[in-house]
Image 1: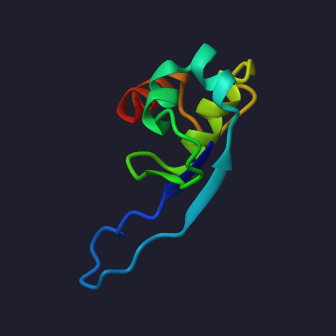
Image 2 (image 1 turned 90 degrees about the horizontal axis):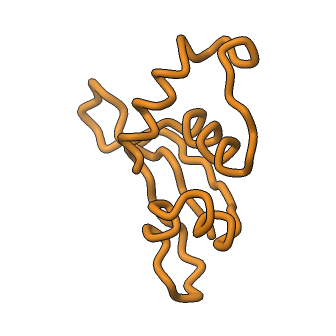
Length: 95
């Protein structure tokens, strides 16, 4: 499965300038088992078109995928997040 994260129009711009997007790859079976909402967004077909996600930043999506794949997200390991609550709030926006 391919996700294209970001690419949202930058705030305060008058032009149609978009922020850069980042491509993420994930295994469909892992998503079906550990993140069924993300798997559902991808559909059932073999289509490899990227699933666009513009509601969260690529950094947050990277952390969500890390967690889906069994990683433990903690405040000490990542100083960019103020707390795990921020990650949870952003993940809810995504799903």
